[in-house]
Amino acid sequence: MTYLIFARKYRPKTFEEMIGQKPVVQTLQNAIKNNRVAQAYIFSGMRGVGKTTAARILAKALNCQLGPTPTPCNKCELCKAISEDRSVDVLEIDGASNRGIDEVRSLREGVKYKPIHSRSKVIIIDEVHMLTTPAFNALLKTLEEPPPHTVFIFATTELHKVPATIISRCQHFEFKKISQKEVINHLVDISQKEKIKISSSGLSLIADAADGSLRDAQSLLDKAVAFSGEVINDEDLKEILGTISKDLLFAFSKTILEEKPDEVFPLVEKVIESGYDLRFFYKELVQHFRNLLLVRSVKNPQDLLSLNEEDMNDLKEEAKKASEEELLRYLVALQQGEPGLKFSSHPRIYLEVFVVKLSHFKKITPLKDVIQELEDIKKELKSPSGKEFNKITFQKEKALEEKVLEEKVLEEKAPEVSNQKINEMTPNKFEEDKGKKEREIEAAMKDPSVQSFMDKFKAQVLSIKPIKKAEDDKNKLPFDLGRKK
Ligand SMILES: Nc1ncnc2c1ncn2[C@@H]1O[C@H](COP(=O)(O)OP(=O)(O)OP(=O)(O)O)[C@@H](O)[C@H]1O
Ligand SMILES: [Mg+2]
Ligand SMILES: [Zn+2]
Image (cartoon, rainbow, N blue to C red; front, side, top):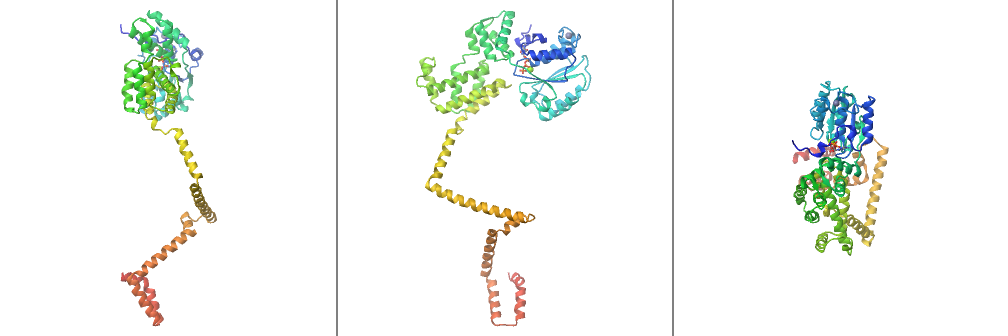
């Protein structure tokens, strides 16, 4: 028989088997009992808390041969088909790989037809936040007039990325994190059924690392069994989850502190290859940077860190690569990044991008330097030369202000006059034009042909030849000049 991972083997088949999520389960069961099932639901919440599981149970509850019933039998052909993911009327679509308008269009075509074998068609779209905007718009139309006998269930880990127009047309359920106690109880249950021997502190270690995700807890237990067999001791568990190799942590801090972003990708690959849980690894990385800051800023770090001399020296050497302030900035950034990694559906990419960013961190000017720069400018402006500079700037600004005001007055007086005309009318522009014309005339006068004409003209005027002739010549002036050229 093929080996089934715990997450699949222990997937609840009824609402009663679901752990936590009481408000969701109760509301759904009541809706079925009272025949008030909505046509569209949206299930949101972190990874591995039962969204897809609840969607499948709802599909069975609606379609079970004994139903619709809040307690599907799981024995009839319809229930079995849904459990085994081979029902033609219950479609599970991955929103991440069917993001486009075409996929949603063909889905809309599909839901036009009545269900073949079942009472209701159930369309489950996982990671619905991944749909494109046109796809969402197409979906919106379907949600406005949903075909009868069809129920949509959207699941997402990132509700904020789903348009409000979609959410408002659905009944929304928020799936909560599973409590530490519930996770441990569930792990005890599996351990008993699978005859696994594991200590209660071992189970706490797993529950800690899973951080509210039941699927993560099951996967970690799977990993522990694969590593140690049916007897899992705490040391093995620490190896799997906890004590991330010291070398690996130092390799990461080296990449960051020595600004070597190109080394990030092979390092993350190594973390994954070593079988570490990324979120657990991240916690250890935060701790490592906290230790670096500690040895950099505290006089006697050995009082606070129980490390042997060699490890302490390594830490001190590493911490020398950055200032205390820089280490503080890394630590703050790492802490702020933790929720992002926790909720990311692509933790590996998230970690890679984050560490690359950190390895560029030193290039970003620290706030302290920016403030210092501003202080320097302030001082300069107060100095004697700065005061003179201020005065000139003030005068220039005042003149500019007056000019703008003047233009505004003109504009108000004659709103029909275009801006360009206003410019032409301003005294400055006038002066400028006048100067230009004078220069042009001066240049023209130096032209030999003009000079010879002027000589002739003067001679004519002086000899007081008949005035008419002179006037004729004058009238011809522009024309004659043009011809002489
Ligand atoms: N509330 C729960 N009760 C019982 N088992 C659960 C619960 N949540 C998760 N599990 C276990 O984890 C597995 C995965 O759960 P499920 O697929 O429903 O998670 P999900 O919320 O859809 O996660 P994701 O967002 O990653 O798709 C299930 O097969 C089941 O074994
Ligand atoms: Mg899911
Ligand atoms: Zn059934």
